Length: 530
Image 1 (tube, rainbow, N blue to C red):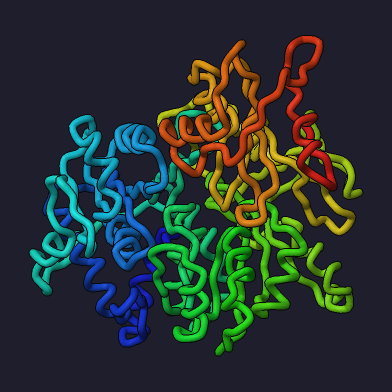
Image 2: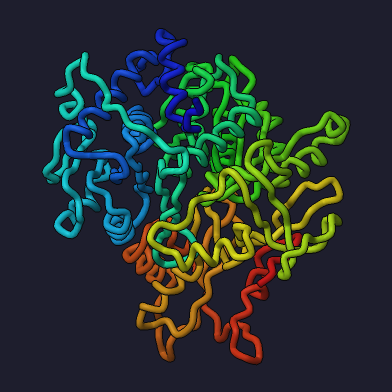
């Protein structure tokens, strides 16, 4: 008899074969797989007793703690859909997502309760569960997480639920290309196949000690929340990014593996402690988000001895669809040449399906490293669609392929390399920022006549948004005032980091803004195209 492909089964396997192995380390706390499994089961039973049933939705807003890991398994094994929330989003975005997702329960970290307090009466929630955190207090009326699961007897049994691999496991909201976040529907099968790719291509081993530097709410930690359990390896939680703390953990916790955006790599290699630490193990790091600079990869390899692995994907693809496979023939190349190769997005992974770069008519571009096209994909990891948005789903899947919106070339060896991002997406520190969304806020300012937002290079974040503004006649608004206005009206990470005032913006004869001309002033190398 066939069983459904679901990453939740790996928790069962880990508890069976590695009951006494350390599963999770979170600060001073650590849990074996047996104890972790018991906590997960208690969460499932407590949710069931609270009236949650298969196909219901539960929203979760937690940092990288053991509670977040427990939610992925405890919610999912009930056949319930988990909605991971980005706690960096604005109050309005969070309100929209919670209501749009039809979440019945919210599990929230006490540190991140403030925005929920502001809109609690506007949320369609039945209950709030709060993870208590020392040093923080909330006025929210909700049950404490530990009290919630402690009411479940140790001998209670998780309700039997039949899971179809094509049913939803998570709805992951993008902060992407439109002003309203889109709910990406990912199935059990999507997550299972992506985690299998994570296991195989990132070479996850039983003895690995994996540091969760990548937010788990980002495409379910790229699949790391599942893959590490599948191998019976150890999860090490990290509440927030703090380079000296991370470098200290490399030494003291015996970390062997991590994932993160290029901005995290940059923070680590530029921290003074980087040249002092004595590594216990060789370190492997997968990076994605914004294309990493070849010089940054080289620096990470030389200073920290990191074996860098470049992967590429989107929330809509669970997320992996390309990885930069390393060949022995590359070993003889100079360090800078190796780094340049590692900066490419690469080739298809073994299990995800087909990915290629195409022209506007759908035919594949020449493999010459020059002809620009759009990356499209289809296969096992591509989302079911956008939640309650059939129109955008149809647009995304036109021609039977998912259209990524990323513009790239294909090299003669088949390696794909991104050269630009369609729809003016800015990826800053691994976070997606829509330039049109920022422009929408700028146009609300009474002193702004015209505005354009572009990505500019940044040593720390890879790229950051810059606003180029034409003031209203006689207006005297300043850069500081514009930035403060944006920060007051949207998530802080989306606000421009720089503002330039100009007399006019470049346009075509028909009045279309020519952003590529603005970008040329800030970017060297391959020009951005519109």
